[in-house]
Each structure stands twice: as C-alpha cells, then as structure tokens.
Image (spheres, rainbow, N blue to C red):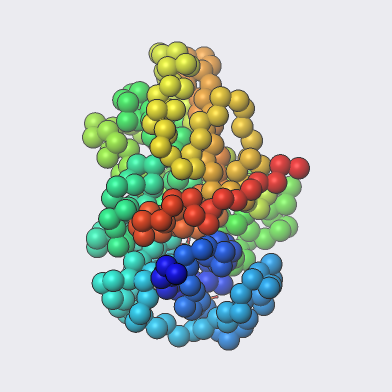
Length: 323
Ligand SMILES: NC(=O)c1ccc[n+]([C@@H]2O[C@H](COP(=O)([O-])OP(=O)(O)OC[C@H]3O[C@@H](n4cnc5c(N)ncnc54)[C@H](OP(=O)(O)O)[C@@H]3O)[C@@H](O)[C@H]2O)c1
C-alpha cells in the first residue's frame, strides 16, 4: 500500500481549519498525525466541529510535535504564522502550507499558491502561501485579460463575501444582529488582498500599472464570494471568451461559463466560475467561489495535491446544493 502523507493542522478549531479537516479526513493519501488548538485541547473532533461526528477518532492537542511530519497546514490569523514558524522549526522535509497573508509576498522561500498561474512552481515547492479569498476570485476574474494587455485603464470591481470570511471569532460586524438582512462596505479601495493581486498581475504582464478599484461588501449569507469587474474593451465578446477559455484550458477547477452563473453553483465546491458580458464598451466579468474552499482550504488541498505529485482533484470532488 502506498505510504500516506503524515499531516498536521495548526489552528484546526477555526473556520478554515475545520473546512480543511472535512477534506482531509476523506482524502485517500492523508494520515492526520495531530490537530492543534490552544482553546480546545483534549476535546474530541466532533465537540468542536459537530458535523464531523463519526468521521474520525482524533482529539485536539495544544502540543506541537514538529518531528516526523510530511506536511503541516497553518490556519492561523494574519500576523501569527510568521512568529509561529520562528518558534516552531519543522524539518526541511516537511511541506508547509500557510493560509494567512504572512508569506504571500513570496518572502522566505514561499511560493504563492494560485494553481491557475503558478502550477509548475507549486509542484516544486516545499513552502506554499495560499492566496486570500477575495484575491483568488479577483485574480481568476481578470488574469486572462491582464496577461493579454487588455486592462489599459483603471479596472473597477465590487465583491461580496459571506460571514465565514471573517473567521470564527465574534465581532460587531459578524454578529447575527448586524449581518442578518444587512449589507455594508468595508476597506474601500484599500483591501489587504490588493497587494497580492497586483503581484500576480505584474507576473502575468510586467507592464501592468493600472489602478484596481475594489469595493468589498459584507454579505448577509454564510459562504461564498461574488465579484463583478469591468474595464473598457474594444474587442468582441467572442474574442474575450476564446482568450479566457484558452487561459483556463488546463485548470482543474476554474470554468468559463457561457451561460449566466450564480453563487450557489460554487458553494461547497472548489470551483471558480467565470462569466463574461460586453456592455456599453466594457468587458464585464462575473466570478464566483466558495471563500472557505477555492478561497482557502480547498485551494490549500489543491496545492498539497500538486506539491505531492497527486491527482490535482484528489479529495476535492465536491458537490453544490442548488436547491
Ligand atoms: N475564513 C476565510 O474564508 C478565509 C479565507 C482565506 C484565508 N483565510 C485566512 O486563513 C487564516 C485562518 O482564518 P480562519 O477564518 O480559519 O480564522 P479563525 O476561524 O479565527 O481561526 C483561527 C484559529 O487560529 C488559532 N490561533 C490564533 N492565534 C494562534 C496562535 N498564536 N497560535 C496557535 N493558534 C492560534 C485559533 O485557535 P484556538 O481555538 O486554539 O485559539 C483559531 O481557532 C487567516 O489568516 C485568514 O485570513 C481565511
């Protein structure tokens, strides 16, 4: 029998940690060595993630055993992954996949983990910085156009995210009383993901120098991200479709849809759907992902599959619930 990948998850009690465990307990190549939480130590898996009852006998631990691992996922808040790795030194044989922003600038030997643009680098990587959720959706919405030099003026976009995008801890803007039946804008034109978006766009097209004007919304739903982006475009819609279809011809989870899309098609899947329109001289791009899957833990497993030479789709053949 093929040797399994001995894996640990740090921050396993949080939202991305929980979503990762849902994928890993059923992944054919994974053996979970330990799952870490300071606040939930010694609790059984289903006491923290009740939907996982019957799926595993694991308990949470507050101990970090760095030796003997093939893989560790870090599901820690922004700014916590870097100090964590300074105080916990893993063997050079251990692949590290970090879900925070801490290494998305590709510092300290990390490779930015967007498979649609960097699959060759990810296959060789031992340290992977998983992209942000809005960043994933926006990059996949615009990458073919940016690479082809079509974005020659500031690109405008709005995006709306579900409440799980903000993590498990309660805050005034994630509280049910605020979020339910409500919509609000935050971090106008200044979202932290703009940095990694610009980094990718410059890699795709060294001359890219346009403003990315992004209006992020908090939505009143739990999961999912929807982005609408547009920029002036002189070409025909058919030409745009052909360019996008060509760009994503080998993508395992990103699909260009010629029919209208909606959010429910991607929730609970690792898919990104992209749809194009040409109106009023603009190319308008719709893109949708599940923030916890393609925007976080699903993409982390996709990156793991690439880094370990597995089928890119292993453990990720999920289904949406459309009604
Ligand atoms: N939520 C999303 O949709 C999403 C999407 C893309 C990327 N991300 C990124 O993924 C990371 C995790 O997000 P999340 O939504 O899962 O957050 P979360 O629900 O708040 O979970 C974070 C977990 O980290 C643990 N933790 C905090 N500080 C720690 C430390 N210093 N050492 C060890 N453990 C610590 C906490 O565990 P204890 O219970 O043990 O205290 C907590 O359960 C963040 O960097 C986030 O930006 C999130």
